[in-house]
Length: 229
Length: 105
Image 1 (cartoon, rainbow over the protein chains, first blue to last red):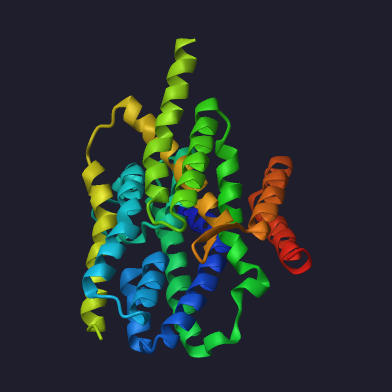
Image 2: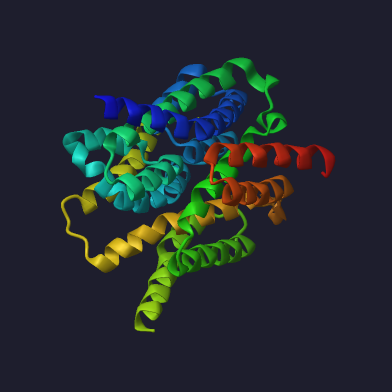
């Protein structure tokens, strides 16, 4: 029981910086969706059921320019491709939850993936931790979408630097893991692939999945070479 | 105008489906050591790519570098290496990133 309490506390503390960033992002979603005249029930229900910042923002943008249902759904599939990779990597950490994994799967996102994997690497499978960070992010996302809809343009997340929390949290989470040559090779390869793809196709939605699939091969290669040496 | 309820239902199916397929595909499978190693590098690759996408921002089809993220990120990295503490490192980066946004841009 004490261990569970400690896990919940740790999960909440570690989720907090990203929850703040998610809240800021959710405000932006609410504001934009309200401007697109989607209606408060639709805006909030989308947050409750879809729970995906990138998908929801893009859908709102596409609806405002009159995109077709097929093009919106195709874009959503592209945006969600990386979830396949996240799910596969997170599977071992979530499987001890047995049937509850169907509920925990709902929380597979960029942010829960980053925190969940960091936890798994140190402590092994911890579905409770994953559940708490998911719940924290979920509440932040749904509430902020609602608030953004209600208050409109009165809050500017950029003014408070809330948008910076995402990348800086990722940097703080990434660095401790860069302690071996294969890990460093993986990171540099992913950065190179990321820069290359963004340069060729700015803002494309495949950068993360392509880097996520290909860059680990560089890590395997470097590890193989160092074992041979 | 599309029926928003139908749209939300389909988006839910696509998004939840993508989340659960990866987990269920790996459920109960014994991973080879190489595959396990591969998946141990996936987070590093994904986080690195996510950072790149936050630093390089497309504006009107052209890539621009976000100086607040780049400089704030540099100081987060330095603070993290020196202090080994997660939260202070992020806070230092945000403060410096904000300073860059207001004084340099």
